Image (tube, one colour):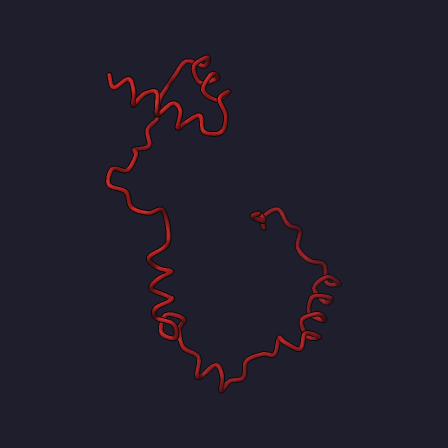
Length: 102
């Protein structure tokens, strides 16, 4: 579930103070020292194979014949009938057009 931050109210001073208290009380949240930061490496340098696998897997897989997005004007009744068939109404409309091959 995505959170839309633009609709969130800013934190009050009390809320921010409580968050900071909780962070400070977390024993697993120690801040990195200057020495540790100096030794830090970029993710891709520290884990090159993992970084490469992540880079390759982004987005939709490539297909031989990708579908094309278009704008199409249809009669309101026609559109209503396709929409009434469910969530995949666009695929159904595409199937009908593919079968027609006019």
